[in-house]
Image (cartoon, rainbow, N blue to C red):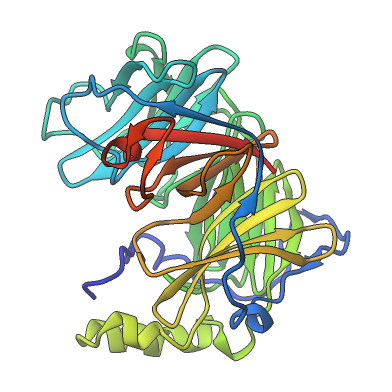
Length: 374
């Protein structure tokens, strides 16, 4: 499997089927996003956006990171980027006001080339800190964003899971714990005390039939075709995303995985299926990125009625999401690695954007962040 960045073995312990969780489910009927029907829709014109702003990030860091970093969170006028690659695992902070470099954070006690991988990081904007759970010990390191220094170490109840936690301190931090009977979701508050839990009996799943990720700072989870957000003790349905025969399910995933492990070309094997790879969500708009037929599609839906508003198609499979925006008289911009929070959208300008932006040559635009409203 040489083409896709897949976390095999991390999610493989989680196997899900449609079932009834033992905690509350909001029964409001969510919108249907017909991924199966829309798979053949052509890309649309650039997305019209409002209040677009552009900030060039400084190059004060020791080495470039922008090809790998994603936006973890935004706190006030500080953007926090997460970089996880074989050489480094760190958070990098920049000012959204002037693009100045503010610092970086890695796990305590590690030097260059020795960083422990960051498996979950949760920004607390109320006090300007970020929580980094240490998965080797039952501890959570708390760092100050302003000084990138360790300010506290919290203790937590140890749970046997190395699956990346989701969510955020405003709602809850969610840790998935596979059990012989299904799945338990342990939920923590901003002090990493257990706040609640959800049990999903009979749960099965895997690397492709599982959706467990963050939409902004909101944990997102999928059972069957239904996408839920996670709040303390509750699964809240926000959308139904039918894929029909183009879905990978627990029933056919084992055969697909055996084919991939035997050395088959992953792109060819996965071409017939619709894989959900990323979700961002804000103000009744969902940007859902799928992969099918060796292409990626970043589609914007209206969650009030399930209508497809915008579609972008691209073939750079390692980009988690990418759209083309056109707003406020600016030229069309390719914006990737989207992040949404409190009605505001953020993204890193793609290196493929041609020409100049605000007089900045395109060679430098991959070091820039665009923000806008929809």
